Image 1 (cartoon, helix red, strand yellow):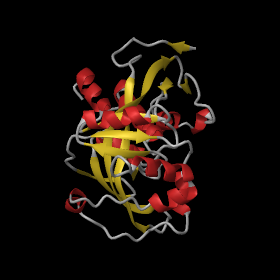
Image 2 (cartoon, rainbow, N blue to C red):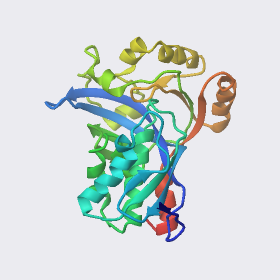
Image 3 (spheres, rainbow, N blue to C red):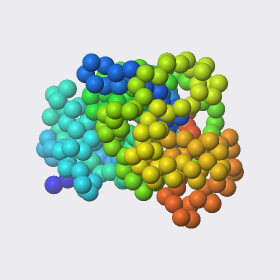
Length: 292
């Protein structure tokens, strides 16, 4: 039975797990173990899932409610909490309640972000005192995007996504469309005709407008819904794919321009209006509550 929280700072609080966009994605090689070497830019945006932690009277890690179609033992948040326990020997437990707002299979990083929020917050609530670098090394074992959300800022990423460098991104607004399909990232990265030998570029090249996504051609070929969404968005600007999709997006310099397009599209599609953030709302909340 769950011992409901509110007992102790941070328990029973809604912790945000923000979305991300890949502003570009280059596949520059492949390791012997099959993992792809990438260059990408992660932009944190203000769309979030919510995660609430409650104490339990024993050492169990459980979900308040399972996500449909996902076994509890496979859920990334459960795996993240179990990984913390295994690595530290912590004996306590937790019940995790996930408020799922970000679309699954959309390329917005929702599952990875949920897992990162679990690692960051439980590290504090359980008094484990692991460093950010240690948490990031644990996070990459759960997924290549998890360290980005633990780091908590928009970044330039290389390697399999774990080598992060600071990057300045101007304030921007985004209109994000979720086509009616689910893209399997593993399938995209194992497709034979995926470009795997793009030339590496520098941050200055990205800033000069090199924004291509090497997964775009494969995803459009396999998912006509993505191709159609990109074509429709192209009427309003430079339509791009985030990660392996399915979500596609437009970038704007100001909220008014973005909202104008959002209002036109939202009548008939699953559309999100989002602001780019320099710092994750998770880290902002950690700072406010814990001087993180």
